[in-house]
Amino acid sequence: MPSSDYEKDKQDRALRMVKSAIDAWPAFNGVAYHIYAKGSYANNTNVRLDSDVDIAVQNRECLYYEYNGCEQPSSEGTPTYDGDWTPPLWRAEILAALDAKFPGEVSGSGVVAITIDEHDGTRPDIDVVPSFDYVRYDSSDQTRQHRGSKVFPKTGSPIVNYPQQQLDRGTAKNGRTNGRYKRFARALKSAENQLVADGTISDLPSYFMECLIWNVQDEILTGGSDLSAGFKSVLVWLWNGLKEENYVRTDWEEPNGLKYLFHPGAKWTPGDARELVLATWQYLDY
Image 1: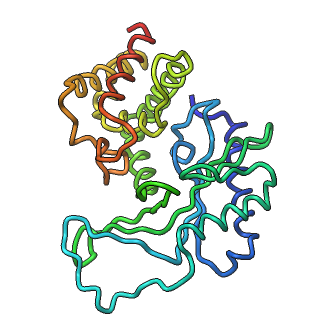
Image 2: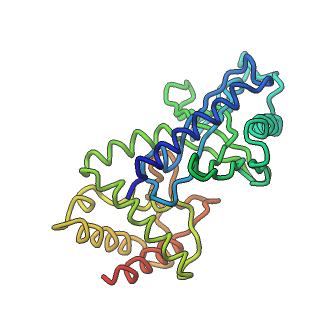
Image 3: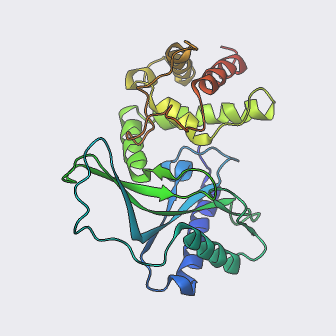
């Protein structure tokens, strides 16, 4: 089930509190930035008791870009950024701003996110992700472009996300399937939570379950005489697409439609998906 109204109020309050912390920090005076909720909270695919809030604090002073499958035009005349905002400095100032607002409750030890501890009765756990504006050009003349965010972990390679595309496409698919897309994404997440708690499988990123359901055809999601039968059909469809151990699905996408699900460097594998689907089937006694 989705978050209750009480949890939703806590999540909204968390976003307001983070925004107030960033807005009040002197180092950010006059700096262009964007603060927004992302992930399962923003997309309404979170489940009760598993509803931490992901909030991006995105620097708009510096634009990162890449040319995808096309030739990059000459850089002559292209403006370059000569400001002070490097990824380490951006992260350090965000951490300082949050420390000032939430003393003793903030941890910067994470590789990607800065974490603010849950405060009972007022807010859930908050993951604050420092990021930068990013654009992917799919044509040399820049007429085909996709705007997103670029995140620089403390270790490892940068991560590119497309939160707005994920939100828009997910909303459209949910409408086409009479709400079953997000309902079944939450169902798979709930099953994964229980399977992890039971020690049956290892913990998987919440986003992975949303990705799997995203790839299920609309007519499968809307089939079945009731929700239980429909979810059973979803698991069968996923299993049939994943059961060949030596075959990697190269056509499945993330919900943003701009990244393949099983790309190099992904935090999951087809084997993880097979294990999850089979364990969910057995857990539900289908």
